Length: 138
Image 1 (cartoon, rainbow, N blue to C red):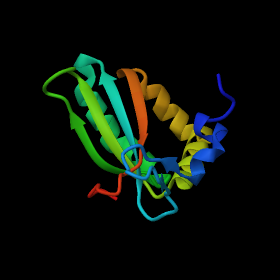
Image 2 (image 1 turned 45 degrees about the horizontal axis):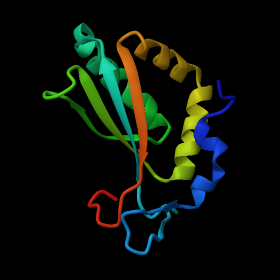
Image 3 (image 1 turned 90 degrees about the vertical axis):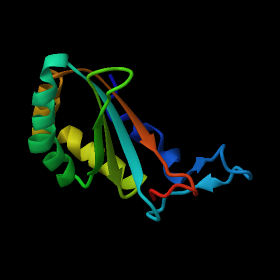
Image 4 (image 1 turned 30 degrees about the vertical axis):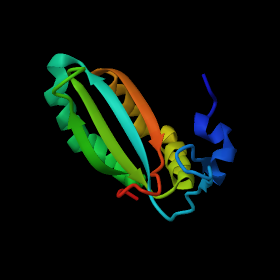
């Protein structure tokens, strides 16, 4: 197990990310000019979807909001993998994201929330997303 969150082990990420989609492969730098997004995909235990929604509304959103992560959208799947929820959280910058995650993993309320989440989900996959220059969500 890592002694600290993985994103803290790669400080080079703070400088920018090479963009394979851009013709000149320039660096996309997030110096506070636009938001970055955390996409979390959760597999919810089938008979626990109502409990998950209530948990997200009453506990998850307020806690993440306290650390500066804003819920942009939350969806459930109706085609494909069933009982899946996809949440999209916005954060001011990669630096702010790192600070928020570091503070969250040290927070007793977050650890309690994480333990409860594990009783109503079977897995969670997260991805950190940077908007491309053509993205309307910046």
